[in-house]
Length: 199
Image (cartoon, rainbow, N blue to C red; front, side, top):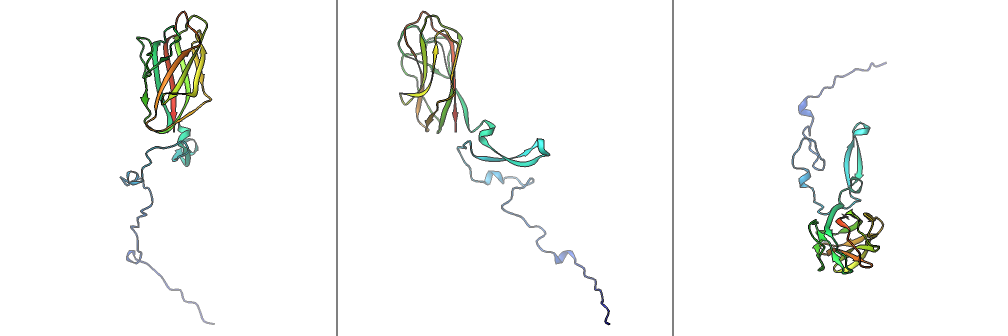
């Protein structure tokens, strides 16, 4: 019966090819400039995804939406005035806010910088007014009232609309109006208004 003969088989480094293989589609932890070379999305939306390493799960890689981070549309915008006066004349709240005079009777508009959705309109007064009346603070778009508004008593100090939303595009002009149901004895004071521009 013939006997099997074992042969030694060895390789040297020169026999192995592609030792320095580079995957041009991969992102590496030691290569600069790879992320800056990726196509840019200039206006992220809430549903966009990013990769994280979960510190609560041994840094396992996971995905999250931008919306879960509270960015990509949640940019706050503020308006404010010291007073909205006492007559039934509609007043317009100063963009960015001021606290040393009455709101204007002429509309004060600012231009929306990007497309998105306005939501969560909140009104806070440092001092309640006197005299029974409903004060309605309304987001206006391109000189027209929208559904995003807060109707509150003149004697109240806080109100919010967290239900309605208003879609806008870059270049739309917005303002905040304050309308009274009737004349009042004294106005709410130190009025601060905020809302969010979500993606």
